[in-house]
Image 1 (cartoon, one colour):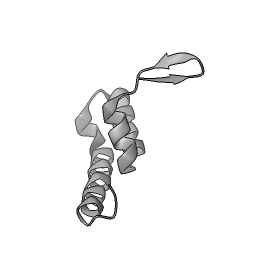
Image 2: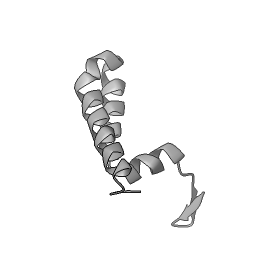
Image 3: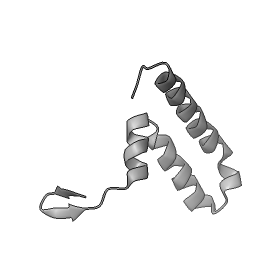
Length: 67
């Protein structure tokens, strides 16, 4: 938990992890699409982009290029 502008802010551990990967915006796009369409199957482009981003991050992590 952190303090921001005098208010308590609860941090989401999943969001914190995704910020470190650099894929948070892809995650948000998947969430937005699902919220708009109410059907994850209609969001395959966004899901694919997110998976690609995460795969690239994992590849870099295994090479020791990121932590």
